[in-house]
Image (cartoon, rainbow, N blue to C red):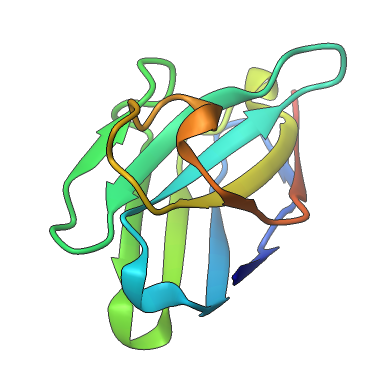
Length: 125
């Protein structure tokens, strides 16, 4: 079992920045990757970014490349999502997720086994 707790969401103006945190606890030593997804009202959950827990390899959705940065602190079992140059279309509930296997693409929700409760990010124009 892994527990994930997100924090750092809030209201920000367009062009601003936020940093989301996701603290993991439990069976963290066997995690393969951690990812961030988001879901806007009336839309499907979409991939944002992911990071391999052991190697720090990262990958991003095209919509956030160059603006968002995912990183992790193994000592704190925490993954971060630094979001810069935020746009109104970034408004969504952001979810952290942990996966234990690498057989599925990291951009697929099916690749993840545990999910956090989500944190709201609202970008005003």
